[in-house]
Image (cartoon, rainbow, N blue to C red; front, side, top):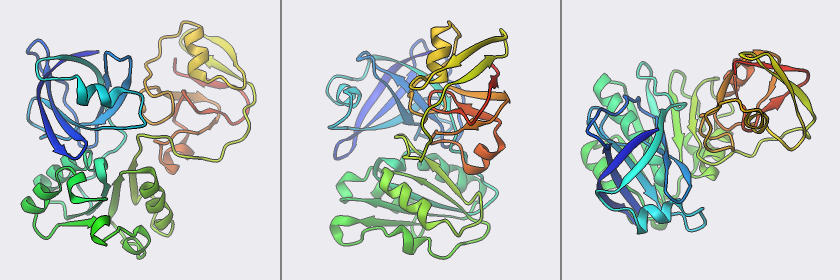
Length: 310
């Protein structure tokens, strides 16, 4: 766990504030890569994931927090209570949203989903990677960093503002596959689902996506199975309605976790034997097929015993 202090709290758009964070005792913060996020631990007992969106070499961390009216109270605490000088704790950084500077990039962002894209754009500029951003939102006032991006990168940023009659249509945008280009997408679940659907004809590996809410995936009914924790050799049953993470915690096995819904990657665990039924919203289709790791907060066994590196 990392102790942090809030250096600044800055309005960035309607309902969005930016927090600049530093190590509480003057030390160095862990290095991170574009697309990384941290798990912010709040005094409200909420633990939420926020993308790092500041300059890579700043020595501080920057996140942007949108007020979630239907949330669990974490964003309300940030907006209503948190002030510069106050303390926070965090885990991370963690990254499953990796930027590949060696290939051209098409960034597709919606609303607060622009945050993990910002350091990717910085990295693309630094490496000379060809890139383009299509950034969608309801109104300009609700789109953090929009005007700054247009000003800094003329000709590379296209804003799609619904209130101005310019709603983004992923089907049209991505109708023609572009070989050798990677599409990076983050935003509301509906946008990401539409982008995934629009890219079915694209080459495998062309889409990199970041979700902070679980994706709806078809799953079979839970059945009991056995899991072996390789470090101790202990074999336990995982009944329907309980996760491997639940069983591990009940048995006193130390496992880092956060979201408990398959979106943050904190509980990712190596599979030593057996086949997982993947129910997470992180691993790509290729990564799930490779069956090297699984998110034990949601994923289960496809049949038979699993042996995990725990």
